[in-house]
Amino acid sequence: MPESNICNEPQNTSPQNDSVIPRDSAEKQQEKAIASCDGVNFTTIEKGFIICLASLALVSSKLPEQIYFPSLIDIAKDLNTTTTLVDSSISFYRLIQAFAPTIWGALSDQWGRRPTLVVTMAINTVCCAGTALSPNIGTLIGTRMVHAVGASAIQVIGMAVATDVSVPETRAGYISYFQLGFRFSTTFGPVLGGIIAQHLSWRWSFWIMCFYGSFTLICIIILLPETLRSLAGGLYNPTLIQWTKRLIQSDSNEIEKGVTSVRHAEARNRYRRRPDFREPYRYLLLPDFFLIMLLTAIYFSVQGCFMISTPYLYQGYYNLNVQSIGLCFLPQAIGSIFGSICGAHCQNYAFRKAAEKYDGDDTDKKTGKSNTLPLDFPIYQTRLASVWPNAIAAQILTALLGWLFMVKTHIAVPLTIQFIVSANIIFLNSATKSLLGDLRPNKGASVSAANCLMWNLLMAGGSVAMNPAIKAIGAGWAYTILSSLMVVSNLAIVALMKFGVKWRTKQNSRSNL
Image (cartoon, rainbow, N blue to C red; front, side):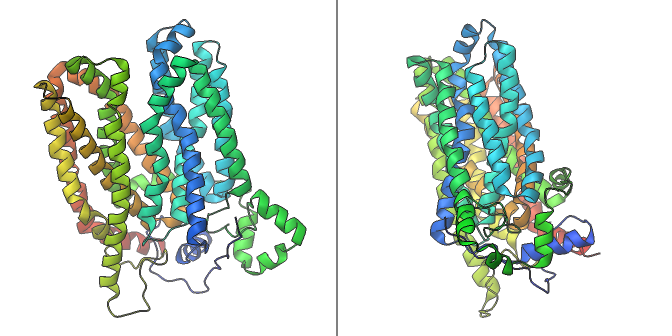
């Protein structure tokens, strides 16, 4: 990976910065300087390569989570325990998965993407081997809990990388393509897990993931450059190739010429400063961030309820076997991939049109081509106005889906509806994740960690309640409740479009006090 140009700190910072959280004066000035620059000048090919590596890393963390599900019964038999105890390992994993990223997010925003990604991937890889070697259920649960500490952070750091290398004009595309690693894992993870467990054993599923994780970790160490704007350029957290090149050519002095003294001092002391682990939680106290994250969490939770109820519904209403039920997950996963790609292109198109309208005939503005968005730019309307058809379609079809199960319509009908609903949910989430990146591009990991906390907690609750609700009141009413939650979330979209700019301006004013 070629070394990229370093973005110097501007001498005069503009008041039109991202919405921020009040903090000490020196740190605020440093943060504003970083936020106002364009970041590192990676080429389009380099950005694509970086996103590809980040997505491969995401697969190494999400596939072990997905291949676990088909083997639950086999694991219980092999370890001579109950399925209830094996299921509890999933609950503990989800709990750690919700809170661990808030720690790694703060570390990533201070130490850089590379060191935190390398450490979390190493934990992920070692724990895959530990799971494969587990002699009893206690060891398995403990290993899975440690596994969640590392694996859950990889998605957060990868999201931050996608935010780092993009600007508002292109951000939706980079985030969506990064998320293809997640879509691939959810699509093929259960299928691969079932095949490996059937022909080899459930332990071999994790040995294979250990080998894959080791390969990906080596690629990250050698090839993935630092992307955090305050550290990028090759001087800090260099790749093995960059470090070797500097050692041979002794060109570190030339690199340092492009770094201001303030930035250099901040970067060199990054490991000595105490990270602010409360920062991800502070975003939950800001009205616009809270509503965006709540909106994302509600739709993700609905999709999670789809996944958890699929085996029960298709076995109960259509009497399918385990292999056929596994295939019923494919429409949802393929719909997610379709929605991710379409959402990326539509979001980028909507932003370009809004930026052209905002700039008018002023060719010097170039809104969206840097990470500093003017405070009066309608970023909330730009991101959210186009999602109304997707939100309404998801709401109507979700309610309809539950009743279709109860009348036992042809199996192709609910499968088709699940494809459409999943596509629309991911389309909407493409908008919300891009919006979070637009608001805080220089703190992508902390914001993503807070977002992850919100939707993991809601998804955990939905996963626990969904099947008991179906048994108690039927699939029709259970899915109608899910639809009602999405309808109520429309209020969040309305509030963000009406008050978002006002909230953002107020937060910026408070940060300048």
